[in-house]
Length: 522
Image 1 (tube, rainbow, N blue to C red):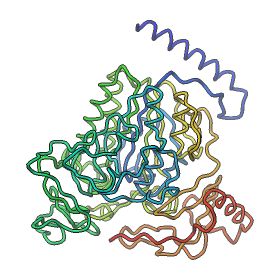
Image 2 (cartoon, one colour):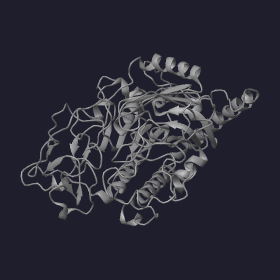
Image 3 (cartoon, rainbow, N blue to C red):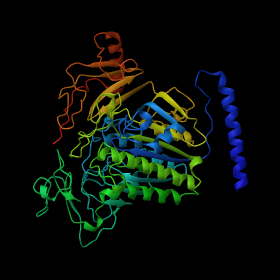
Image 4 (cartoon, rainbow, N blue to C red):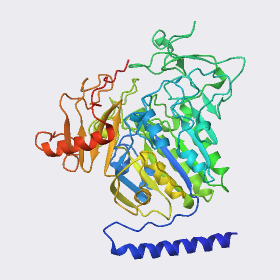
């Protein structure tokens, strides 16, 4: 068997080399499409609130990230890689469905008790891959709703990830700062004692349950805004919860826990093609690095959890290599949105940030229509298959649906996803021509080097997180090639370009979608 496999690989690489040689006469960096090995494993590593400037390969000097840097240096590092949204749930929705989140009015930051956002009849990446014989799994953060809006956490929770294409799911329901603070495996709360049932409510507290607002003496982490409800492990959360003591997670062990689950999963799938969506929780709040990583940076917990996440990525990739899977596994690593420092807790992220620029040279951050809200680290790696390079091609997480369909021999249409497989594999530099970006219901438009942000009412800066939101009484037009930091509004200087951009934008988005309620954090 081994010798036959070796011959097949030799034949494949022979034809791959011939294809590359034939394509040398084409335009610079343009190569003919090359066949991929049948049913390669696919892993999406998705970080949470990781900024464009938070990794060494994207310019950080304050946070050591050698393992993620190694993936970037051995694969394609995109300088124009985008999440579809500047917040978490919408980006996750777009990644898994290939559809713009603004097309779904419910695709917004969800509470822990929200119903399932993805319709069970909807196309999804895991469904598509299941149709090609893949085993599919999610490990980590879900935050796309569960059930039909009235979940009994003490029984089978459905519909959820398993009903939209995942054969196996091991998740937290929403975010680390929201209740319920439990792990859920294939719809069942892990380690739940039936004699201590869970209750969850996002409107009112349960009798006798302490809260961060009323019982500050019980806290090990002080809340800044919006995180003053039920206390778990000394950390005040969003929402109220009672019971389920034996099922509650340990925050400082969460990264290790999800890593071990992801490692166990790939070890069990050595003989089957698999798709793993490994959705890490770092560096989202509350930032709770394991004691091994406390002090790993001088930036406080936020820097430390990024180092922790990098270590987890290194350990996971090492497992793929030890299991003989790395050379037949496509890895995509990105983030759901841009960075935020103070996002609800006093954890020194803003006071100890020093000279570190989480967004790099970009303007804005999480919640923002400026570039730092949606332009994020975006890396593809496939050992022996992708040649190391930096690509300026514009790509979006939306495009994984159509691109992975092409990789696995599926025809995919009917979504906003564009087939950019050759771009992701480093065989072309011709990415998207345009893209609609979203932040808390507001949208902007990028076409080529230009970005149009329509006029929006509301505060220019969010008073809680101190991030520019992209709201202004007049529209803004920027040339990102000349002005990546978006300092010069060129609307008046280039009226024809502004009109051209507006027409293109309205073709996709529709006219009159320019005024929305500003984001309010309580």
